[in-house]
Length: 405
Image (cartoon, rainbow, N blue to C red; front, side, top):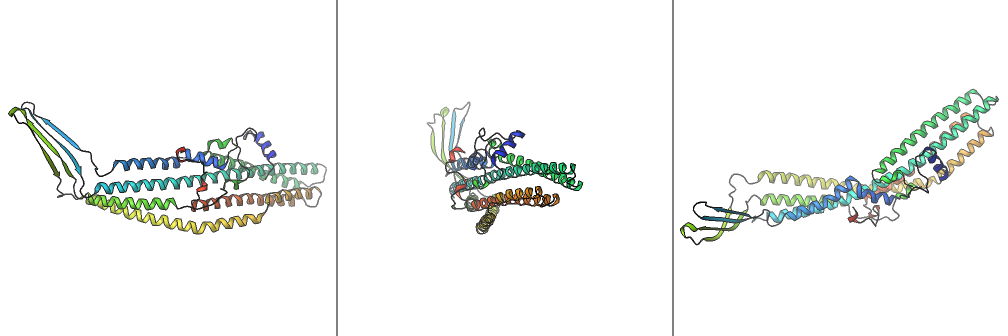
């Protein structure tokens, strides 16, 4: 990695970053906390839970409110009225309650899975911002070295110690390094913009030096919440189908009626009342068919989610282990690259290698350096995929309370 003082000096030159003394440190956990409180997906999934709980409170044994009616004869003094409570004798309300309860379970599972996914995405975005910063610093230093090489070759040509071809090669190398530096600068700006979706303060914050710092230090597994949510949706669909079948029988209205005719001295009368619909023309077949189709879709989605979860948990850990081992074999590739560049510059200065060879070797070293940075980023992403596949709860900081979101 380029020394921190050099990176800060360049940042001051372009006016893009504040110095470390001015910037507020921002950890990956900070980004996750911010993301869970503001990311649209996290907010939407968290809001869906109380909405599902409200729907559950709306249903019970009585699916409809009681009805009351009163009538008064204007001229005759007749008063009459009824009070009626519709009741499902086939348990429609109980099945509706079961469906709503399963809906709450599904919403909670979706919210948990969304939180973990957003946390993994936020950590990956943080790591990419760090990696692109390092690539930018590297590209800027390479551009500066190319400029120094070109100036040195031009000076030698002026005294007859270098060929015009050497000058042109040095200029082309400088042009290539300049393009890479500009592109790296744009990539880092894009990475910060993406990270700002999760934490707006990331633009001016002091990020970590190592992208591997985004990974939790403790690893564990928990039940897949997306599978639990899919199972809850199947239970909800089954309960809805039972409700629609129960709705084949119309509700029975149980209540009382009263009437009083003061014009004829009637002391009044009151008594029970029972009303029931007769399922002669419609028997709720449309809703039953729809509920049956929804149940088949929910079961198919459950099998799909289970298969994907099983595959991720079987395949991704091997990828993560492979990436860890491969990255470990690279050793300190950044230090190797720095020393190689120093050796190339010394070789050209002492005349052991010519300009064309120096340009080619520098390009290979820089390409290898960037490849090493990208390999580390790929390792971070592979390990985050494992953590998400196993639903490692440490993706979310332990001090992130539910009520904070």
